[in-house]
Image (tube, rainbow, N blue to C red):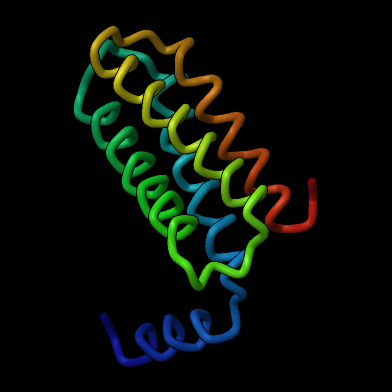
Length: 121
C-alpha cells in the first residue's frame, strides 16, 4: 500500500465512529451474501467466503456484548446475543443444506442493524 493510501486509511479510521465502522462491516457482509443469492450457482467458494465473513463478524459482536466493560444496557446486549445465536444457526443450516432463500434473513438482519447504527433505521 502506498504511503498516501496508508495515511488515508489511518485518517479514516480515526474520524469514523465505531458505530459507523460496525454498520459498514454489516453492509459489506450483506452485500457479499446478496451477491451469492443473486448469482446462485450452488454451494461454492463465494458462498463459503460470504458465510465465513458474516460468521466472523457476528462472533466479534457476540464477544463484545459479553464483556463487562460494554456500555450497552443488559437488554440491548441480550438482544444482540440472541440475534447472533440465530445468525450462527442460520449459517450452519445454510452450510449443511444450501438454499439461496435462506440467505434472505441474514441479509435483512445485517441491513436493518446497519441502518440502525447509522441512524437511518
